[in-house]
Image: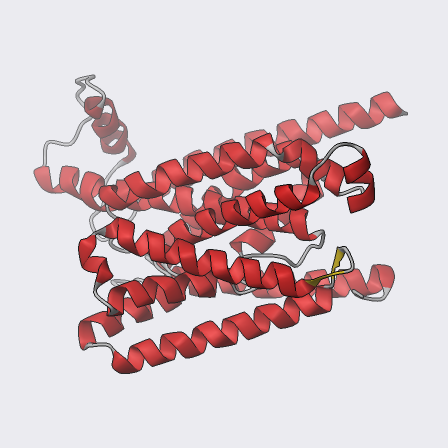
Length: 352
């Protein structure tokens, strides 16, 4: 029986890996090809080969096509992959340290806190120092929001789900009020940037921004994978985890800093993109189970896939327009959130 379960688990993992790889490749190619300027797949492949020094006959000869790919579409695709991975890993880590399935940067107010930090950097003029300054302020905002949620929702050694959600509502409301105040005092240029942060968008992504997001996301992903074993032990309960040698408080503090880094760097350049950290880890957990090493890696890839396709829809649904990507992820995440609520109610009568 155990051998059969192991084989079944391996098959499900293999199926998920192949499915994600196919979706990722298809999404990248479709995002590079589709747009106001049509580019054929051969030109995309040829351009990539030429970029690594392999001359070929498929590479585009039109400089406009080449510029469209390397200045507009490739940085946008790279940013979608990185931000999707960062938000999904942040969601998986939050669910691990809080021990409940509703913890997610958008739901508990961490994304709003990071957006408030980024908007503050814009209004006070710190943004003029460079993209890194906005990312730093977004990190500080996200970190303060995460610490507030953590300390308020923890009581008697456990996380109270109702308190967690209420804290998230309060943080979101406070951050919303802060953003409204900044909109009131800001000049017209800053207002446009703040509205952009509230709605979420990958439009205008640049390589300089990708080069900031990439190392932070990579460090967060590696750190989350390294901590996967303690997360598994923490799922057995705090007392059991301590008996098995886990320093629970240190694990939580390190994880909170990691979540703030991942969320802050994502929000700093793309605004609030809600529900990615909620939907993706749950979807992956349904397929491969709760073991955190596989879950975190699968969530990173799944988050990238979700945002690549969401961004493709955002710039394709309305001809000549570019919908906010946060709108599309919320359309997916909202019904999924209802599903979680109804499933939990049917299983155990709701959350205590």
